[in-house]
Picture 1 (cartoon, helix red, strand yellow):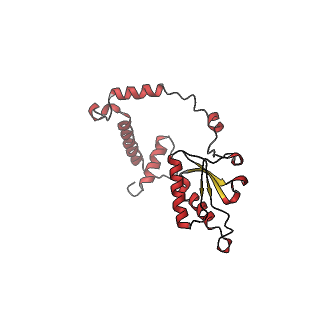
Picture 2: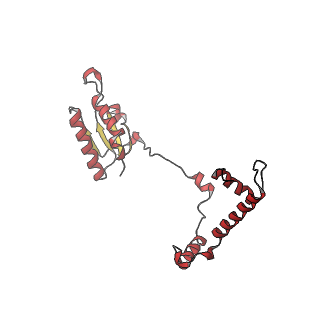
Picture 3: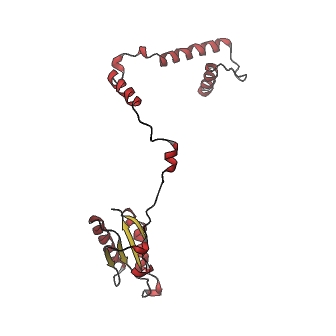
Length: 190
């Protein structure tokens, strides 16, 4: 038995405890009796609470009674499987953009990208602080940019997707009457 691994010993003890002795274990009867005696001693020590001195326990009798009474008084009526499946999980806020009326506006036309980023950050911070939502950021469509690449539009979209996402509940292109793809309507997380 000395050469067998610890796992084989645990497996053997499990089989012995449950009254099953597999053929692949070829031990002498003395080894089996010795193991079963050790196993019974360990189980008796684990199950016998009287061996512990009351001072060694990390809790008092009052703590034990309070815990047991708390378990008895638990109300599990609202924890049914049906209520879990009926709840909507991960519902996303999706406002009706067509009828949105922004409370504040920021127009970025004519600004450099560096100055526009500063203005965007300041505008969103102030609106969140004052609990103003929805807001409108007008960045333009980029037709006046070099190579017709929308610099400010890309800047606003990048900011909203990265740094600004912690402040924003929902954002999308504005409705046609507010600028369409040349502006963003933003609902702040207030």
